[in-house]
Amino acid sequence: MAGHGQRHMASHAYLQSDQACPDPATGLWNRCRCRPDARRARRLPRPCSSSLYPCSVVLDVDQLHHFSMAYSGSKFALACGGYTKAGTESGAKTNMGQPGSHGVQDGCCEGVAEWYAYCGGLHVAYLLEHPDNAAFATPLWPKNGASMFTPVILAGGNGSRLWPLSRQSFPKQFLALDGQDQGTMFQRTLARLNGLEHTPAVVVSNENHRFIVAEQLRVAKMASRRVILEPLARNTAPAIALAALEATADGTDPILLVLAADHHIHDEEAFRQAVKIAQVHAEAGRLVTFGITPTHAETGFGYIHCGDAIAEGGFAIEAFKEKPSPEMAAEYLSSGAYLWNSGMFMFRASVFLAELRKHRSDILSACRIALENSEADSYFLHVSSEKFALCPDESVDYAVMEHTTAGLVVPLDAGWNDLGSWAAIWDVGPHDANSNRLEGDVMAIDTRNCLVQSHHRLVATVGVEDLIVIETKDAVLVANKHNSQQVKDVVKRLQTEERPEFVTHPLVNRPWGHYDTIDLGERYQVKRISVLPGECLSLQMHYHRAEHWIVVSGTAKVICDDQELILSENQSTYIPLGVKHSLANPGKVPLELIEVQSGSYLGEDDIVRFEDRYGRLKK
Image (tube, rainbow, N blue to C red; front, side):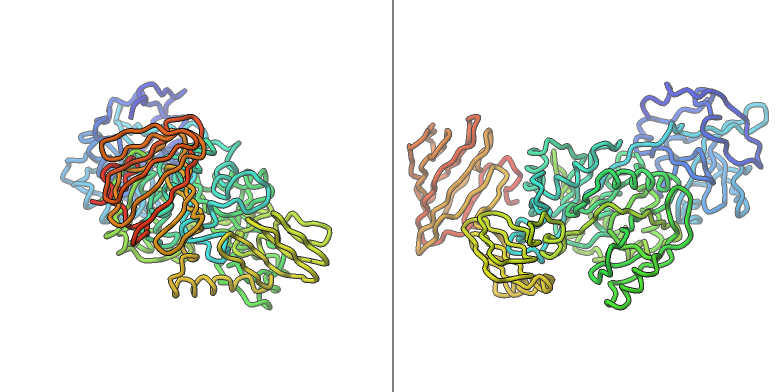
């Protein structure tokens, strides 16, 4: 509520009881004698606007309760679904308006509980005064032009169809996949918003990927409003619900732009123009989805059947269609009335939450309870695992978009690709004269239409076409390009057989840096460890192994039992079994060292932590 007393509008007007609320420019905040209790009003939202309520505040059930407390004793009106009610919070009389009426009604409110139980949806609040026997209405928060939006980046998922590069512990959204050397897909998604007016993003990711998110944000010098960590995957409807609830927790009601973290968009300016069009409709209370202009008869995407054109470049949604057969996809393409379903959205947070409450209240309730039982630190919001496990697993299309009457689609023709398979990676190029996409140390002879990636050694191909060849340190994939969707079957088998290649790469990222397993044998393991400047490993001990550390470059600060050492290049130390120890990098350059482990058990779960700056202590 801070700053409201300083907002001044140019003129004012009186509103008769049978008139609609005036345009925001006709209100005058400082003419209103009522002032909210700032302590109780801090959770109230920013204004929104629509053709029905041009100067209003959209409230959900919780916010309506805070509104009634903040303006206790003041005159206000509430409108919902064409009904209005006016009165004081502590009154004893109720009088509903008629359907379709948006004027001020006489009477007073018995309490907000009865009111929102009656409406069960959006509530629009006006603060009222009655000078000179007329009703004076003013918007609680006068709206001055379009507000900034809040990006919501969905960075969950495992990217199993891009194995062996994408693994459970380091999925595709955190990889650089489009061959343009401009950051990872997650970083590119955030950078794509440059040039648009927006607040810091809300990121929704998996608990196991929290330090990857933090490090990639740090490297890219990008800020986030909050990183919400899901303890387990529950699809897009719960993920967006968590983001919307968190975005409104401080009393604001932002427009949300929901983006997947792993999409490729070639024409970023066209994307930004589509976002600006979508924001106009989102400001008016629409749930906007972005539909991709199809370039071929694709069977791997869902489709959106477009209806009549609506102003500002939007179209009504006739229906959502599942992934079609080749014949049906060809019909969709030739009709010109269908768009690919991109999974990107834009809407006001309160509008989405109201529609979710209407169509899948079980999801909203489960997410609200999970957030109420979450734990927050300075950077992450850890959603309750016990509570979130009770949330249904549902996509936002099934939960809301297929049922809402407020949906709208904005076409997007920007070279979009969801990078959902190795064939899609080949498709975005770049290609050589033989339509090959070659990366790394590759020798291609009489090779056509292939994707070949080498990450650790020479890969040579002779007399082949339409192949996918992906070489990593511990696995090689060879597949027909037309069967690239079946890579997920390999991943399922790896998971069933509990093979380590399903979970992780030999190079493992940690919040302090990373380590790479160089050699592993009976009772020994050799690792190369890299510690970032200013970072440190936890104070820990092991029950089953001892360790030797040899510094390759940089400076190491070592604590071993009660002894503190500073080691530089070519110096070493020994960590006995069962002794508390820690490793830190006090220098300005990365610390590189070789660790040789020996013992009866060398698993990563043989770590007992006593101190840890990254919140990894077991409770």
